[in-house]
Length: 406
Image 1: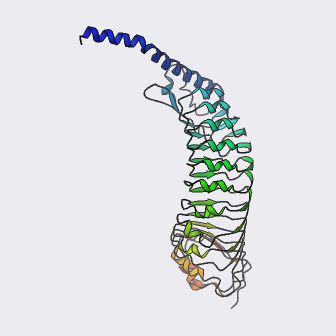
Image 2 (image 1 turned 180 degrees about the vertical axis):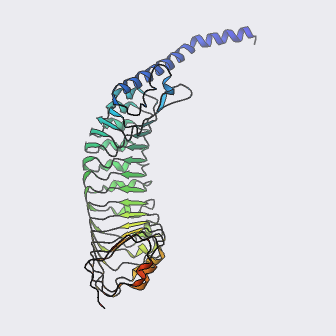
Image 3 (image 1 turned 90 degrees about the vertical axis):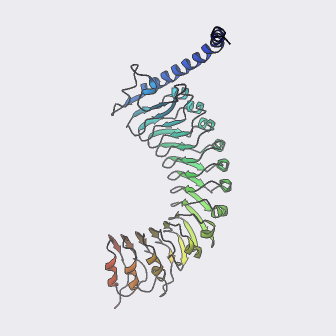
């Protein structure tokens, strides 16, 4: 092919296809440019001057907080977290059609999340944590099917979680704690087949945990502290081998813990169910919970003897206070000997139970990292072991209303 023919064909190709492609890119760039300027207009305070670079002297892809795709120069990331920005979120942000990552966390944005955000079909990460956003959970967000992370914690959202939340089947991390949400957890949450972290604590959610949560095979963290949830745990959750965190303190959950739960939850690291209405004994299977680092069951109705805990090598907090553990017998504190193998233990609370017997000299062999020891309001008798002085990191020692006898 001659150079003349080649150039002629190239010219024809440019005529047929080039201008449309160039025009599309130009329009996209202009749309992004205008959307960012509209966003800036609704910022009432910018104490760090982070948006000073947002002017016509430089291309918007070089503005602070902006990342563009290398090919088409369209906005893919908007990252303005932690700059103490005041204002509201412009609805024009919905015109940034190529955006994958939006982080406006740790600022002072107010008002509603604009429904136009639901047009961001490629959005994968939405981080609006720790602002002053209000209103109900925006249903249009459930149309952003590519979302992997939603973090709306620390705002002022009200109302119920919409049933449409179940449409986000790629969602892996859902943080919406510390808001004012009410109502029940929608059963459609069981459709979030990719969900790994569910953090919905510090709201006003009520009712039972839906059985549909049993379908969440990727789930490894459940955080539901400080709500008004009630009923018993779905038994399937105790068989979810992926779970590493169960944190449901300050609710009204009831029922007993399955005897084999620490066999069926081999990866459990963090278990806190304080201030509920659980009852029955501590499962003896806890003796094999080698991954456990925090075990907090205070302010419930647990009874019986505390099993051996010597295999919990990584345990750093053990809170058994305000239960009905022990039966005022000489063997009640035998488990303390096993705790001498827990070299990382920092906090131990046994107050307000029915422990009897006396403190053995082996208490001085507890971890030298132990800084808090609370053993008051029990039926413990005898002398204070001099070996207690071996606990060189001890900062708080509470033994109120212990009966000391010579």
